[in-house]
Length: 360
Ligand SMILES: Nc1ncnc2c1ncn2[C@@H]1O[C@H](COP(=O)(O)OP(=O)(O)O)[C@@H](O)[C@H]1O
Ligand SMILES: [Mg+2]
Image (cartoon, rainbow, N blue to C red):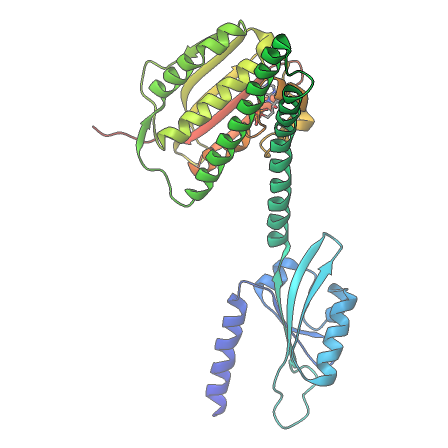
């Protein structure tokens, strides 16, 4: 190949390596860094040209593997774990580079390291395992209680009419709890399945809020909570999915009634607010005046099965999935969920969704 075209090929290769989304590092025979691409510099900002690779990547397994490739001239594939500064896992491919017929020059790249970050994959895998364990546990508890009552009814309490009535009532409530749990799990997985499809139908939130509030009126009355609606007499259009948005409104109002009961009042309002970026959002606000939520719980509130008080949630018929569902639906709609609360001060849940301008 001519010199000119070789230089051109090198320039193209350098640019291609620079654009590879995973970290790529080239080193010379002295294990000094002779090239880093953007992804590598992003992950290890201290990785500098001309400096020893192992100053930054201090991983004994990696050192061993690089020495092996230097010695044997064969590619190596391995997984490495970095403990500091943060815990990370990588799949690493180390390839010897052809050096031609002469011995490599001092700063000539002789080896390429290609790294693929496994941290996100690992975290997702961890979450999946946790989720299955939690869901099974949540289902097993009512199931164990059902089995216990069935066995009691078949044996010791066979002829006891009063006990039977009482047990059947408990069994019914346990079976209902399992149904709610399965319904919520199915709703969650439906939202996840649709996550890549942006909802586009025009939806007016005002009648939806009125409708959901009406269906929760009985619960509010039972708990002596006054449910007040504000601004539902004019339309608030968003691009959305009616079923999903109904679940959001239902969950937030139901939580406010159940967990904010002591405040005796729940306010639900709609408004339009300006986004910092220039557009406008429709804001659905659900405010209660109850016991509120201590600050340390706020960041975890939307995790699946997370509750501030597990026994209180169970006793109120909760599954711990309501806010996880709300958060998923809101992000499916490219919206935002804001939670403000302090212990003893009530709680405010705000859902912000981009306003859809309706030109009629
Ligand atoms: N308005 C509220 N006031 C106080 N605590 C709340 C409120 N809304 C939710 N929480 C807390 O957040 C937890 C999670 O809510 P959610 O995901 O809807 O699950 P669930 O209602 O099934 O327990 C509840 O168990 C409760 O501890
Ligand atoms: Mg709930």
